[in-house]
Length: 244
Ligand SMILES: C[S@@+](CC[C@H](N)C(=O)[O-])C[C@H]1O[C@@H](n2cnc3c(N)ncnc32)[C@H](O)[C@@H]1O
Image 1 (cartoon, protein in one colour):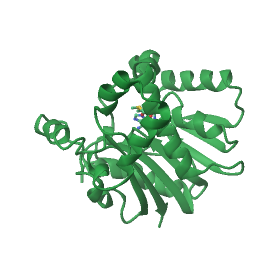
Image 2 (cartoon, rainbow, N blue to C red):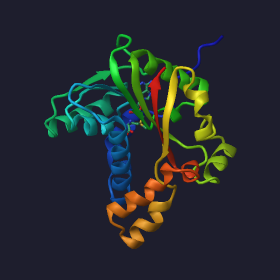
Image 3 (spheres, helix red, strand yellow):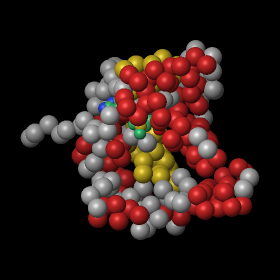
Image 4 (cartoon, helix red, strand yellow):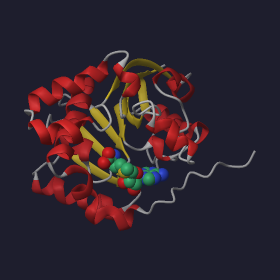
C-alpha cells in the first residue's frame, strides 16, 4: 500500500502575517471567534491540573483561550511563522502555562497516553479524503490517556445544503458527508459524545450588520445549530468524543 500524502498545498508561512487579521478581526469574525471559543471551553471545562494538547494551533487561538483557566497547555504546529505569532500573543497576554512545540500532527512527538484532552480546530478538513484525516485521528488517540477527551472542529459538508454539494461538484470534497457520517472518521478509536453545529452559513453577514444584534442575541441564534435539524445545515461542526 502506498503511503498517503499528508502534506498540504497551502503554505502557512506566507499566510501567517495576515492570518488573524483576515479571519478573526471585524465584528462578524469576532462573533464567530467568540462562538468557537465559548463552545470548546464549555465542552472541555479546563481546570488547573488538566493537560491539554492543541494540534495545529496556528496562531494559538484555542491554546490562549484554554490557558485562561490555568490548564497546562502544549500547542503544536509545523509552521514556524504561525508558531512565532502564537508565542508573541502568549507573551503579550503574560501566560506561562503554554508550551509550544514544532512538529507534525501525523507523527506527534509525544509519548502515548499522556494528555487529558486533545483539541484541534479548523484542521482535519484540510486533508481529504477521510483516510488521510484518519492518520491524524489515530495519533490524537495514541497520545490521549484512556478515557481522555477529543474536541475537534470541522467544516460541515452540507453547509446550508447547497454550498457543500456545490463545492463537492467543483472538486472541493470535504471527504465526509455531515454529522451522520462522522463515525467513519472517528470509529473505532473514539466514542462520539456530542456533535453540535457552529453558526449557520452566511447568517452573520446578513443579520449582524443590519440589525447590529447584540452578541448575546447572536449567540442565542447561533445556538440553534446545536439542535436537529439545524445542525445539519451548520457551517462548521464541533465534535466531542472519548478515547474508547
Ligand atoms: C487553518 S490553520 C488552523 C489554525 C488554528 N487551529 C485555527 O483554528 O486558527 C491550519 C494549521 O495547520 C498547520 N498544519 C498543517 N499541516 C500540519 C501538520 N502536518 N502538522 C502540524 N500542523 C500542521 C498549519 O501550519 C496551520 O497553522
